Image 1 (cartoon, rainbow, N blue to C red):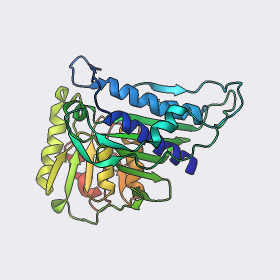
Image 2 (cartoon, rainbow, N blue to C red; image 1 turned 180 degrees about the vertical axis):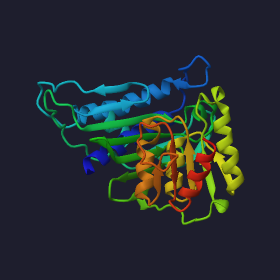
Image 3 (cartoon, rainbow, N blue to C red; image 1 turned 180 degrees about the horizontal axis):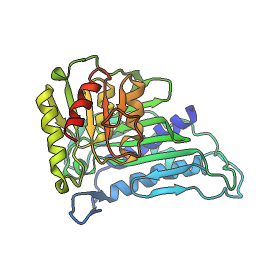
Image 4 (cartoon, rainbow, N blue to C red; image 1 turned 30 degrees about the vertical axis):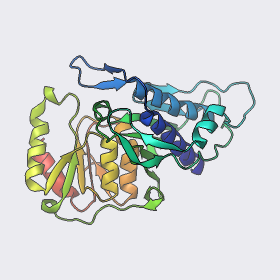
Length: 316
């Protein structure tokens, strides 16, 4: 598991450097006719960095990425196994760079990627004709709309499935140099320190967070009904624009509950495991076991879960 975590951490930090590199042109396109779902050249560059490392280290593993879709790795090459020693990688990760944003975020207060890239062991040769049980699930830039508008709340999210169960999650916020991570059964961490969900047990005193899907204009009734009901019942509701960071902030005890509709696997794979390992609970709106391939998610500190679920069911 350590080799997986080392690779995911390294990939997330490298992708974070892509997001915070300045003096480059930002090119934005739209995935939908309504021109609300954005993708930028930075999303694509970040994804390329992450998938490149995974392909080099674990060439047999599957990859599911937001922009590239599902990739079943090609058969192994004939060349003998060798360590990953790309000059570009080693040189780039030895530099100590200041975290700067090219999207009007100004100078950040913390240094980026001060830690060197963990040692990446030699590649693991895949078995010919066998589909790997491992699948990497990647969001190279969660919070693209925030990023494009210069709002400094975005991240890189990397999860790893084994036989359909998420076993590892890494979420990196390069603006704050915050690294959230968890492995199945080992707890959740922020910058090396253990994190736990809050102990709040009353919804009326809870701070919640949510998000709106890109297509909410097509069916606003249910979404705004949920928002109204939970706003009325809680201390307050925030909407930040990054589901992966919302889940991590819940895991760290900053929020007490989270819900959202119409999400994708890469939005929740890493963050949902981090919540669970921090002592929280994740499920569907009816309390059923969460599948990251279902569209809706309810996450909480566990204390207010049934209270939130009851209101969501009433406004379904």
